[in-house]
Length: 501
Image (cartoon, rainbow, N blue to C red; front, side, top):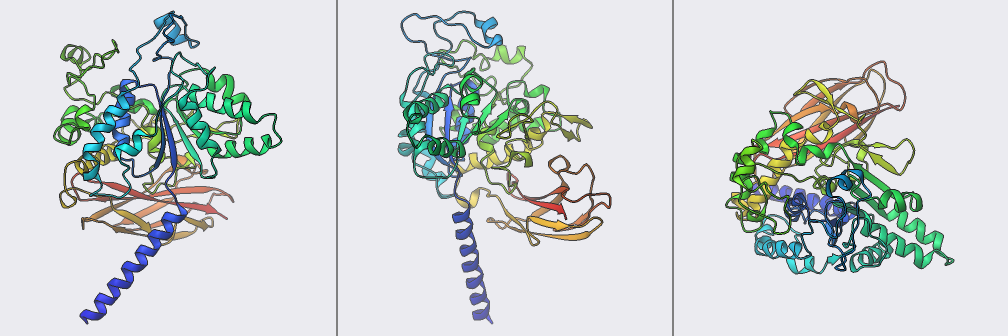
């Protein structure tokens, strides 16, 4: 009997390994390049991103400028912002709050100290040396400067033109000017060549821009009119729940995950040298050349009615949250909604998705439709996951928690008929042997029907009844959420899309 059980386990394990291998082949890690202007919240976004660097293939870390930060040309040349807000705020300047071009390398030194420990928990974390080779200086002299080729723009150009057809997600944490310069260089090199049409189509299919606001005018002035087939995911409303004014956006019930008590205990303190650099309220830290970084002082903290070690901002983190595969199937389809927010296709540009103010999710904490809630709804899951990754920096495998893997027996896409009743059976594999509890819920806004399904659930099973008043083509999104009993508790998902036929 023991031999039979051992054989059964061996076959099961081999089957699981084969499935995981096939999954890895069919779902390669997304390629991505980060462009950043070095804002305080860029630093915090960068630190968290490094703890997830095994989940995607980083191919570039590029310094760029924005309306808030630029170096100047060293010749005393003055400029005034093209954007009204900063033009009024700063007037004519020769430079503006430039943080330099060494802070990423300095943080990578700290990452290098904890990278061996991260590898105890998951494969694929790149070395600090590998990542340093990707650090490039892009167009930094002025806001929106794209007149000259730079090391950063040429690096982006090279990757967009390489023979790997896999999409490249261009994360825009500052201005789009260095990406715009790369595209301009491609145009100048090939526009009069016989293969221009092929090059244009190749780059247009390959590049995906995830932008948090427009922080210079280069997207509107150059990219949009000249590269209108490049896909754009544009987050202008939802990211605020992870940015400076989060206390005015995040419901009171979710704020403890961003408060100092949680941040200090679970993330900042006693979690290694990299997270010790993470900026928080009242922490005493100061960016040398940024007079507006005053959140570290106790006086400013008390004036703003914050508490010590409160979260300040990670407004750019949704750009890489979009790339994390947590089971929500949203990476390439932002209309589905996920950790990177939820967007809708532009009415005027089929290659652009945006979180217009009219796009809302129902907020159960306020009982109102809320333009930020497509991002805010994931705050607890995001912060608990961050805390687990912080533990990975210093703990061994047995002492830390790791996310469960969720599956649904019936699959992720099911054709249904009006009035049909169906069953969903979920399964969890937890690498730490923790119990996993399930929750089934309809993500109504992600579907195309305004109707609600009738759903009853118990343990890992749910019975779903499709409304009778539906039409062919209507879709319903059911989220299967699995939460483990580890510390910190971790959440993963599967999405089941019901399509009326």
